[in-house]
Length: 201
Image (cartoon, rainbow, N blue to C red):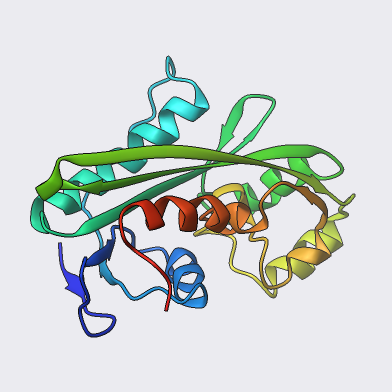
């Protein structure tokens, strides 16, 4: 695991335990000063866990893995899952699989779940929370899907799409937090970070 300095340190130190460029961008746009650590944690996918429990479990594993390296820092770990009819849609294995996923989502509503775990090992403090947003897709033709793939790489995204960028071309409506669909529910996260002494510039 390596940490990437993002700015001069302040107290308390803040570490994002994620390699996600989308979470990094959301925190930067929110005015936060932080460092990045990419934990080498294999995500669990136990079928007997609820979606909420599964995302919280993975977010906690990521946060505590980084906290072992940075015990004096406030560490944030997160995990996002896309589900439709209680079925988890992961990252597609190839473009054919991505097209299959978007055809499944076309014209329907699905849920995006993001769990966040904050921990400060030196203080023995930890807290997790989960946000859910409901996303309604437009009716997509095969041409619409291929046109979207020409603009956005779906292979590194759960559910084979992103809300930002060209998301409006495939998304009809989002009920709930938009930033949650991007990868981090900033409204809830900002409030909880404040309880740990982490505030935006």
